[in-house]
Image 1 (cartoon, each protein chain N blue to C red):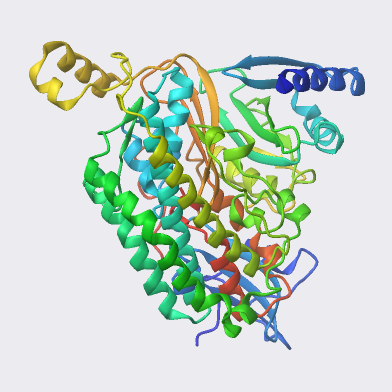
Image 2 (cartoon, each protein chain N blue to C red):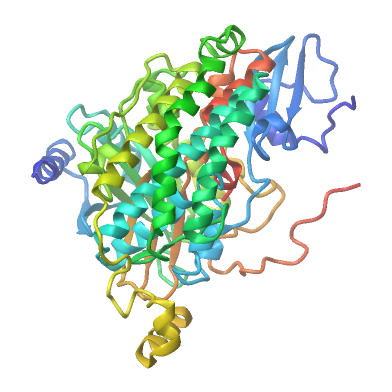
Length: 165
Length: 417
């Protein structure tokens, strides 16, 4: 019951605080998802984290989805959790292939630093104003982005040179 | 010892280490500062974690962890295999508690596909989760003690862990990479011998565990090495996204078994252990107390576990019993269809997280209604906890790094995926 009340107050709060902000909310398997424009992401995250009633203080996960043939090819997905209200929220932002970038939220949650580096490493999505956007797992010279759907499962022969003796 | 050259350390790492304003290069002879490479082949980094340390004398000014030496691309592989086929791969994530990962994965898939699981299977899952939590904490405590110089404790805690591995041996025929759970239940019912062995283990655990503890709790050297080292305040810990014992050692009462109960944890009576200090010693005490709480939960499960089926009756999604596959036509067809084409959960997405020994293990699965996931993201606790290392290590000595890494207890199999 408490969860239902919190959901309503969350939607109301966002409508009150950011009257011009466009988003669509949907719900599936008990999880609430907001689809938002990528220019709003930092502003929304700041509100969600800093508002004392909402306090989404834990950024659990940041990742992306490659839809391969869709117009907006990528979707960046954020999972954030409010420890006080025990509520998980998913934020989604579409990113297209030409302008493959989105603003960083590492100024809001420090966790986002590495999560965004991993997303950059795997999908090649640039995070603007990120303090230290290096590759997370792959070597710095690696030219490809392994989790994109056009990267073959077996890898690309010769793309990872052996270390010099 | 050879000097580090530009080939050993990528310039971008140096840049991160020194801060953008600095123009020191690796070859320069520094007055007092130096860059020390620790790992990836270092016995105290628990696997292939590589730390680059910038030192002033013996004080650490900055630290940059480098990951990826065990990157096997499990997320890519998951997109190319059925949901059943991925269960054995979850064993290889946190290889100190493989059964917890098995449970985490099947819980996510079941939530996505809408499969109801019989209560007996749920209780068995809860029991194996708690036993693997004990096993994982035993290794963590032993390894931490060994890292700071107390070798005996490691032998004693591993002796206790061996008993849990023997239970796994009876339960599913494997000691280490178990692959015991199935979507919609578990592989086989718990044998009476396994249950008896669990009961015997829990009865003798407290005494034997106290023995291990006594070697450490009043050990001057052990306490001096850990007290006040690697402090993360509660606020910092949340901001850095730390979870599990590392977060609870900073005084934050957050446990997914309480926050978002799964299985039957809402019916269990247990305490969420917190220690307010936030140093390595607090994390050690959290693990000790948590192992005891887990034993308490197992005791309750043993008295509550109901009789009944251990696999849901859902022919389209859940594998039939092997005996029936060999003797009945219908079951053979189901088995063939599930193994070859997968279980095709409906279009949708799910983020399901459980409290693993190391922290929050989450699986984010996106399904397009096919037999294999369109996307699978593993939110591994060790990966995020490693992010706290630079914050904790800064300002300490080189010898403290070993204690701090040991107190976080990262498993690189899961941090690197």
